[in-house]
Length: 86
Image (cartoon, rainbow, N blue to C red; front, side):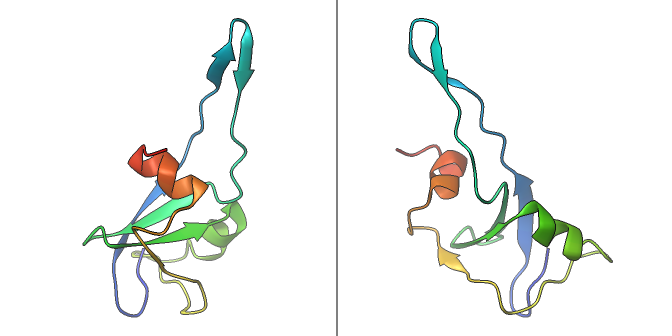
């Protein structure tokens, strides 16, 4: 995936159920199931399934400059799942 200034690797996040007690599980519901990580690993973007479908034409996929870029140190549920941090 490409923005006007950076290239990103696009990942689909899969949240597996996690055990919280015997016979009880919890599964995260992600607002953004797609995670784009810059090649420098310093920035990321969060994408919905609809966003990914919109930008699937061509290779690399080019996205408009109207989506926010987050610093890798910015906490989000999706970033925590990807980087495996609490």
